[in-house]
Length: 283
Image (cartoon, rainbow, N blue to C red; front, side, top):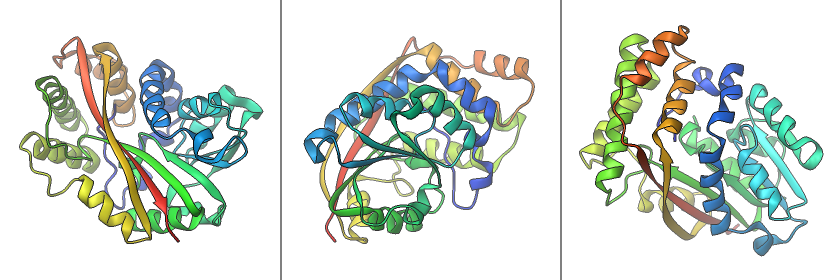
């Protein structure tokens, strides 16, 4: 998974706005699909609100998660994505099976008003640039009793226990972003490296925990109903593809990117822990 964080006030630097980034996603689709399956199995849309309920996929990207949602039998799905380049890829994938909305997650209330039965935000929570605005927006978009489901990984989230394999993955990511920042200094990279350092040191003061998730959503009338943790396993080549994709937004020389990616030592199989949360709108 990406470990790139978008800190407050840096929305214009979001690498997913780049067309070349969206086109590169096909190389890592199986990983995002695996992650989406875990979250959608955790909260099945048909069991929650039936086939006709309104489901939105926030930060839908190229439509990988949406494709998994549609396979459950959902008939009323809207992909919400701020990047036109990403939406173009999603439309190629799903055609008329869904609706498409070019919109930032923080502006959901511009289109939705207490009419959403279920909202997913999968592998995107670390990219929300204004969390307070998003919280208000998702609370306004959901029906009373409507659900919001999202997943979150290191370094945005602090897990109490990490295996040796997971720590090795985190350290490899830190090495990559450190070298990338040496080639192309950027505040997003610096912020990401600092969080990875804190996670390695078990310092969770600047990251989300289960308690903080519960508290911040309670502030907008949403109750934490359930949560779980899963391990996503992937081969080293997938992580290298992710790094290459992310580096394209900071470095233009592909050979330089390839050399940088190859310089990072990786175990053959990487382990990424994800927390999945189900929150219910009580208003």
